Amino acid sequence: MTTVDVAANAVANGADDMNFLESMAGDGLENMDVNTTSISYLSLVQPDSSAESEENPAGTWRNTTTNKNYGNEVKVIPLAFRTIWNERESEPPFTTVGRYPVGGIHVETRQPSKGKKGYPKMINPDTGNEVQELFVYAVILPDYPEDGVLYFNPTVGSMRACKAWNRQLKSCLLSNGAQAPIFGFQWYLRSELTQNPQQPSKQVTRFVQAYRDSITTKELFIDLVQPQLAITKQNVLQLTENISEEEVDE
Image (cartoon, rainbow, N blue to C red; front, side, top):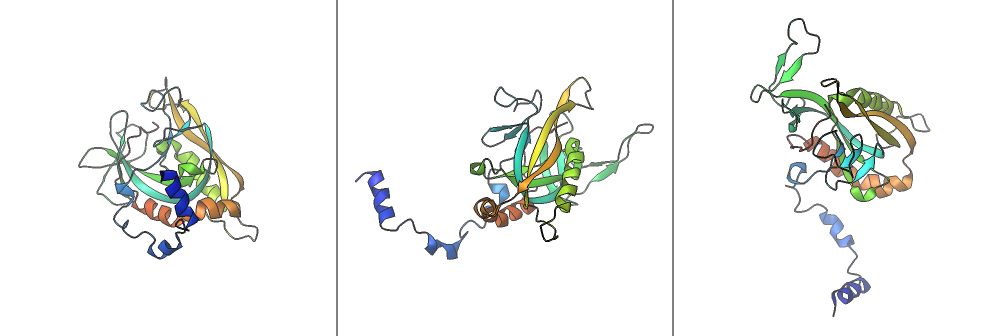
């Protein structure tokens, strides 16, 4: 009997019915958290970065696991959000080396040099690296449901657009006037190549705008959102000290 015949016979005998497993959901996987599995990020392709290629031009979005490119505009349904502390190397390419809960590590606050403009910086005294308070979004792409949940961890250069998006997310209302859940609508995220403030002769890719599309339909909610909600919220809470190999956007 061939493999195909075995599979067909199993289906014919109802062996594909998995209802008996429902009472054991997640058994044996308790110790596999977000820090023990590979994570897919919705990343911005930077000019002259290792991610840039003919298939992934600068200024676009890409999936860090599959290397799939989504162009300079991608539709998402946000599932969860968290503020974190993000530590990055002090030298180019400024790679992220740690993520922590807010207040999760001891930092020193350093004021700008005398006579120079700027804001105070948080420094990890053990490494000398800067620590920035940033955001993490868990999103799913309705046009690419096979890609599963991706995490978007923008850096400081995209914070203005992020805060504008957050304001829109919080102001979304349902038809009865109640505040919509974070996954109540679909959104387009747009990226652009802009001038790099640290190196004015060069460009950097940034997330620059989010604009609302249609509602998340009941079908989308049942098929894509609901199955991911519980585990995604848990993963976002655990998404600290997980190392990224992605270069940051400035």
